[in-house]
Length: 320
Image 1 (cartoon, rainbow, N blue to C red):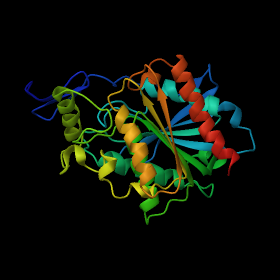
Image 2: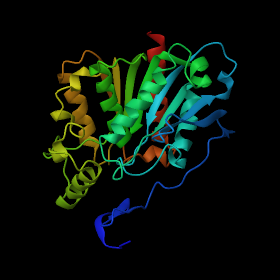
Image 3: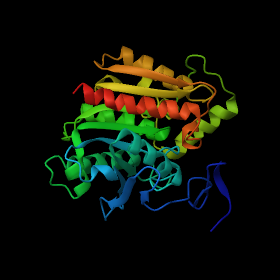
């Protein structure tokens, strides 16, 4: 074992020359539980014993004996493709109130992380999780919660940062794929999406050190990328399939002080010009930074964003 550092991306992680990864954030985990504040119950399910792919399921306890099925949210956690998990307290404590307030079922995907599993592994594992969700369409899947309580004609994808990036790419894959999945994707909710590119967009401005760090973070996650930060996975402007989003509506949430703000705004413009036939909305949180809502659940802007997400899902329910 060597202590020679190959890539130092503090305060997030370090990669050593012997291949060892030291994660400096996002390593804490909490078990699934019945949350007393929200009445939301959760449990972990291993989808594939071979690969270790798993998900954490969430359901309002009041829904267990209810006759009506609930909308399903598939959530992809953030962390630059490299840190955090579905069991992180950051995401567990975010999804409990979201599921409780929206009265939905949620599947939080524990995809494999870079650099041990470089992109596109995160996308491929996320797709496998979606196929597992789809296996419940006829009520014959392995999870009784999804069989009995999830309305697979009323599905949403969401995520923050890298998770929002995954949600976008999964929605495109739904629209493109000949490998049809049986769920009906109604909308995607992209919170502070992790998009990037070699050229500045909008009013974007940042120093060379910041740009180099984000460029390097992406190359660590996706070393096989030939386009670097203009790879279609990370730069929607370079994706010829952006107009094939397999849903009807998109909500993009940005934060005023977030370095990725202009990328989120630019994404909305790109989608509107792509020929896609749906509608896209933009919500900006003034005075806030990247993923602020995960660490300050009860601030005014976090509550407003939660209410917007819930109303976005309820709008879909009313218009089916």
